[in-house]
Image (cartoon, rainbow, N blue to C red; front, side, top):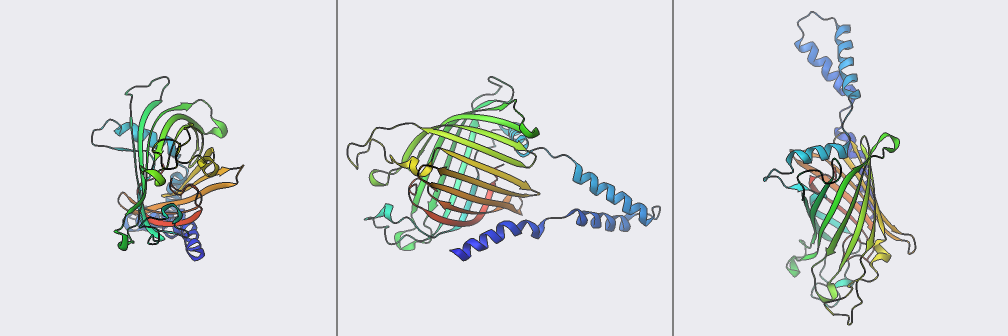
Length: 332
């Protein structure tokens, strides 16, 4: 697993340098094009000066910040009946490797001793607005969203390649810009309610309901988010296998009460981080991700995670995981 971790970190920090065009490359291309196509009226020094101005102007052209750009793009297509608006990332990782598959959760079942450390993972996430016009202030909105995240034991042929864990996450939230502009950036706030469940019964059932808020800050190519939540209390189970009652009363010990996130975009590469921590129990979760261009709308996606709570069945199980695949949509 250490060698895989080293490979991921090498890929994460060196992949952008393999294909990123530098200003020098742009300058050389401009010179070559000018020499090929000019009619002899310009001297070499004049061509150099003109190309330098073009490259400098391109580098200094202000770019729309990431969240602002995404909101603008979404507004243009939100009510198009043939467009599904993404919410979280949409991706497919045909290969993920974990150093500790959670066999304890399936003890006594036919899967117990046949689960593989290698499996596939995919996520589908979309949202739809509930309002056509502004509700309270300019640029606000009320949304319904749904996210499905699944772990598929596609390499476990001896147990018929089951979907080991699937999490369903419907939510409703209100989103609005704020007038606060720290460090010259832009901010937004969100408040919402969500249900998260794995749709299983008895011993494998996991679920919880939360009221959450989101604070989002953007500055040029950097975005930071802070997401605290409050778990809606549930009654205790009268019996261990009762269909009613709290499936996981200790989930906050592992999942904590908040999550932080960050995204940085460099050229056409997007780096992301997600982190959670319960400071009372010292249990948490961290995730690093990188998306990069492949072909057309397809983007490469690789991520590394460590800690507790990657999904609901593993909320109290610690592991490291590395995955490689494709993303249809970025975080931003």
